[in-house]
Picture 1: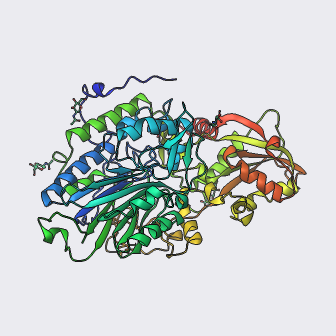
Picture 2 (picture 1 turned 30 degrees about the horizontal axis):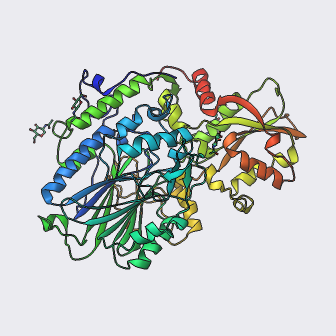
Picture 3 (picture 1 turned 90 degrees about the horizontal axis):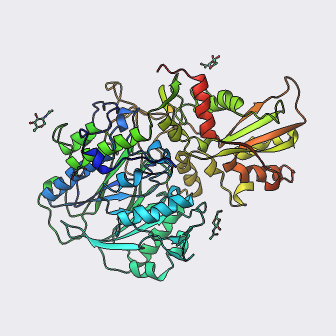
Length: 610
Ligand SMILES: *[C@@H]1O[C@H](CO)[C@@H](O)[C@H](O)[C@H]1NC(C)=O
Ligand SMILES: *[C@@H]1O[C@H](CO)[C@@H](O)[C@H](O)[C@H]1NC(C)=O
Ligand SMILES: *[C@@H]1O[C@H](CO)[C@@H](O)[C@H](O)[C@H]1NC(C)=O
Ligand SMILES: *[C@@H]1O[C@H](CO)[C@@H](O)[C@H](O)[C@H]1NC(C)=O
């Protein structure tokens, strides 16, 4: 176990910072104002450890310390106007960035960094629950750090001493807002997740809403029901909660905050029920304002915050950078940062240094895109993995020269590679998983050759076995599938495929920076920054590299090598092809993780001169 000696006191000795010193400066861009209402929200979700911000993308270069300064300035603004601001976080705070993943045990600094923000309602994501040690840390650190505000409506923790299931945190929370006196009843949900470690119990949402405590809660007399959760706004779980509340309160406003599919989205259920989802990876701070809500308070400046007459909900997706933070607060480089925010930025910087996250494995010769370039193509990260990396790293002395099909799922890759330094941090950003390779020997080629097609066609052979192939692809593609399963609304996404979407502005604004151009139930004016659109290309669930194949003809038998995560799908597909393999036939191919093997490949093949 590595021991790092960083404490808050050592922060004292260094100069306080705003944002990370190596962060690229944000670029000025045309902006949209934030709409203010009686009740305003800021939401983060799916931050996945990116609390240092994006150090290779100016547009998302602010860090958690800057967000702390921003929230303080906005609360002050709200107090001056006599309105309220609440902060929400809907989970998946961990896994996906060196700041969390590079320490042993993981998250050595993350929990202390995260707790510095004051958040009014937060909930758990699936990533907090995959590993039992992470679930335990969540229970022992984050829940008490946010006592009273951390909600777990359908999640229990198993006390390791007694073996008893107890609520992970309190089921709901009732409170009254400070300035407007709005009475809020809040829940915190997780979608019907089944991949959790055995020290937690996730109860299906549809069952939880039948429980007495929930049925009592939705009969309470409040001004607003607030449902925060790691749930996609267009998925079945929120529809069930919406229907349950409406069956008791036909007219009380309901505000949902969602997460999980990593997109920016805003959904209308009815004229007083809406859902916001605020993207991923500290790229986006979601902003939502509500007007026309009952409450005891009075707004001081109705002109500025809109009319109280009708119920109005407006949203903005704030790009997480200092240019925007200065713009929205009317402050500048010297007046914007708070001492607290600067402290946290400095602590993050020292944590990154202590974890050696800038250690350079090699220099990427060009950008490689996960979803921004078509697959296959030379700019595709998956093509690079399939043609260059896999054939090199899949090698075993015992099975040398045996024809091999090596299969990995596209969801094993989480982000793009940018031209320039591929650092220790980048390894966790690209592939935070501990996936290793397994294999099955001597599979008849007539069956093995159909495997990839079966894995990629989302066919019913998997769903009837309760295995959803959507879990194999990057989560950004979930929204597309969700809309197929629950087609209540037309498909919405941050990007459109093939660059078909028209730019926001015509050719008289040629200098827009590429970025999010979100279309949601409220139109296409949600982003706070005007961007040139980026294309989104769907990628297959899995890719495959043939290795050591004969130069002509087909081999009779092959070894099938695959990342361990996809084993249930591989076995099922082989059974479907008439091969009776079980997990007893599966052998370990390598002890190294895909991530480590990729890092070693980069060290060997990419130069050090960025
Ligand atoms: C949970 O899983 C671990 C590791 O697989 C096992 O050792 C333990 O007995 C399991 N605990 C329960 C309560 O099933
Ligand atoms: C920031 O704003 C303050 C107050 O308006 C002003 O005095 C100062 O010169 C500004 N600083 C910069 C760097 O623009
Ligand atoms: C900033 O950090 C210093 C050193 O740890 C501490 O003394 C001070 O109270 C902190 N200030 C705020 C506002 O967090
Ligand atoms: C892709 O890369 C290969 C190998 O470097 C090259 O031969 C080919 O021309 C490239 N294709 C395109 C469309 O650039």
